[in-house]
Length: 518
Image (cartoon, rainbow, N blue to C red; front, side):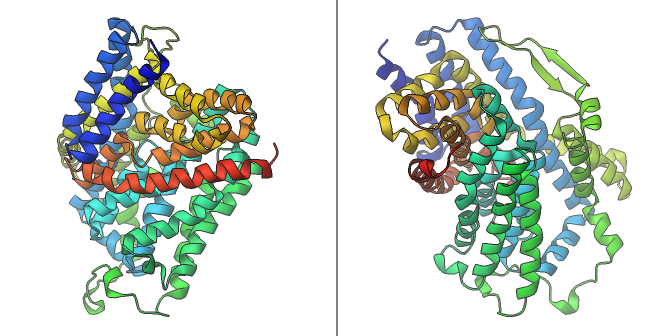
């Protein structure tokens, strides 16, 4: 069949998702199963994938959707629900608003800094689910909380989950991981500095929202960008986002405290808090107890990461490998039972709840309530990830990318980020986007006379853009904020920012490649 026809047909499931979610405003649990059925039919009848291979590809997607992705979402919302039950979230709210009552700065601390840190150490939706829940508890509009956390969870994903996307990209392309890491850091540098300004403007719904906190916003971006670049260049891909996020959080809080009271916070940007006379003084012990489940989540995930190899290796050894997909290039799918972030979060939350004095039966009841709460979101996530597996294994994704490479010629660096964004839009994962398109991007770069390190790195950057519009990511945001059926509204908000992001990265890719040699 003509390659142009294959290109058009391969786009049908993606176009359906854009139209059904963005135009028709269908809920994801209705639109995504239809997209899955359409993808399966195209794989069988157009790409001539056998029924068995199509079924098992989808089944592998179901396995991935349930473990670890849905597990992480359930775990994150479970932690949040427990904090509501115990009243800890009220204490947390008072503590956070003690730093600042300015919505714009709270977004920089929680969605940008804290969310970036969660993405850096865990990934799998924690960076959207947990900060979004806290923002809602602070009084933010749930739809806004979902959107702002999705937009924040872009640049940190490049080095997320302790550098897995860049490490994977190096493996699939055969390129040196250190040089790739540095290339990704350079490309993201201006975006990491600019994105906090975009978040502030979106929070205030105007460019004027930057007035009064320009310095704090600049500090928040630079404190993330510069350490990230230096770590990426000299230490590799594992720690850039971890160090950058921590520096950003700390510097933003310090800057907020230094400037606190120097200028009154405009009323439209203020969080409603109780008058000082009515505010209860929070002791150190009470504060620690309120944050305890979140502190334990942080410690469990950090201590089990690759930063502490003995613990990571011991937990990772508890696994089961199952042959699911039956087609060419099949590899066993591995269920990591203890090393999965979701497992660690649930254990940490149980322990935190018990130490807070909650009965085991009550904690378990909250967990089951959380599972019931997320059933519709689970349908969405399972459908979209099963769809992504079929598109990848059948060759539909390659059909799209190959045509884009053919028609762009020497202008290929301009559209390279779009291919990365497409990969994350479909799969929901920067790592998966690198697996799908990383080598194709490197080969296309060689064919176009461009630097393969530079263009392969652009795939990772583009993939960070696609994160904010991925149906999988949107489903996580919807689940965390209790907005089932609002996927279309969220997509309508994030897709505009994504388009600007991809264009800016395309310009960086095209005009700056000659400035750096690798």
